[in-house]
Image (cartoon, rainbow, N blue to C red; front, top):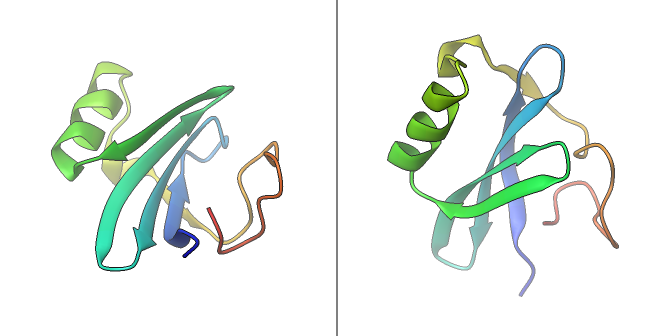
Amino acid sequence: MDAVIEYAMQTPDGAWRVEVVKRGRSRWYRIRHGENELDWLSIAAVHRVLDEAGIDLADLVETHGPADPPRGDARPGVA
């Protein structure tokens, strides 16, 4: 079973991206920043990472496209 990106938001400049990922009954968060990817995060961990980077979660905007740059065989909606 493939993981599916249910929702994604990013900073207005696209430098930071937060994804809500689901596989089966499991749901978690992923942060992408440049070539770095933090996976299997709780919402508390997302708040902590963004806070340490000086980013307010409220400043993120919804996005519908795939993460830049595409990785492997990533398809929109599939993580």
